[in-house]
Amino acid sequence: MKVAIGCDHGGLHLKQDIKELLLSLGHEVEDFGTHSTESCDYPDIAEPVAHAVVDGNADRGILICGTGIGIGIAANKIPGVRAALCHDSFSAKYSRAHNNANILTMGERIIGPGLAKDIVTIWMGTEFEGGRHSRRVEKISALEQ
Image (cartoon, one colour):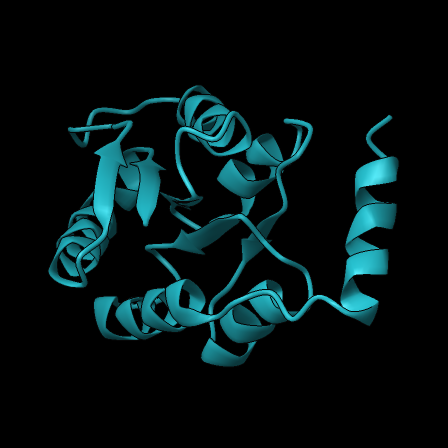
C-alpha cells in the first residue's frame, strides 16, 4: 500500500518513527515533509498529503503535528478526505472499519512512539466494513457538495 505522510515541526520525530514502521511493514511511503524542526505551517503539509490521497496517488495518508488537531482540520477541508484524529487503538480500528478514514492524524506531544506505532499498525491493517456504514460515509461525502 502507498502511504502519503507529512508533519509540521511539532511532529517531525514521530513522523520519522512512523515512516520507518511503514517501510518495515512493506508499505511504500511518500514523505511530503517537513524535514526539519524549523517552524512551518501545518496547512502547507496537510494539503499535498490530502490531494495525494484524494487524487489516487496514495492509498492512505498519515499526518502528524503537535496535537494532531490542526493538521486534521486542514486536511478535512479537501473534498474527499476523511481524516480521523486517533490517540488510541480503538479509535484507530473504528475510524477505518466504520468511517473509512483515509487519513490518520496524531499528535506527537500527546502520545509516545510505542502507542503511535500500535495505532498505525491497527489503522493500516483494518479494512472498511461497508454494509450499513457505506450509507453513512456516502452521506458524509454528500455534505461536500
